[in-house]
Image (cartoon, rainbow, N blue to C red):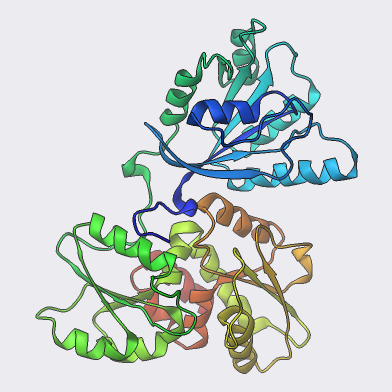
Length: 409
């Protein structure tokens, strides 16, 4: 991935919902000024959700999601509707599209209610206003949200819709930083980035790229080294670094070479805080010592990738956990957009760093596990625990460290 391209996972996710043929795809094309979504009078043209990364002023980098009609019928239609509803788990802003000539019915109200219950910012768009005159004031009062008359054909109201969407974008002050709140201008941060056969050829992995960018935006100084050069790198510095951030897989080597009075953590733990709920993931770690023979453990990855012979999720973590607990554990694996089934059968969920999904989706996954009383941890936290250094790598996060000390007691 290019360094100057905003990753999908940190873009504002704007999803368009509504029945078939209300003009969701046409509206997306009108907003972007491009033929991004396929438009057809044939009902059900859009099947699976379609994602498009765009830069729309004044909104900024965003991910537009075109979904299938919520009135799709039949067995296949119901699968499409289910895929559409799953999009809600990652939606930052919802645009519900209606036809100006058709009164909203129970299905519309059901979905609008679902969006509002999830506390997703909502804008209702009454499309095809060039054909019929909608009663937007009545709809606005009924649904207690912004309702805009729009015509995807004539572009009427499109500018107003973009303006309304931009109001819902978090300001820079509201955005939680990956590492920027832990350092000050001029601080030195050392990044330990192993280069092995799993590393992408010619580039850094996404979490490393994003942390570097956050350090630069904080006016701090980032130094990058490999684990075997860390001791030499530190010896060349006139002052000690404020923080050392490492790939979790080389925790022990980096912990041994980093002075005890220098804070240490990992990319994965930073993303546990940035994308999810660090405190909840730390609480989940306490359940590891309670695992029994025969317990099922789910290893969940948010993306699919080519597996290596020493794959971190499928090989190393199961081996480390069996060695630590001395138990015969059954590991199952899921990758992609969901856990893939009933999670109540699992005694523990181990999640990846979630660099490829947005904060909304990762928090949904954590909440789903929490609601089912299934402990959940992430790769970095688990590895630190297995290697006996969780106390140390939580030092930059006082509340999480206090929670962990309470769980251990």
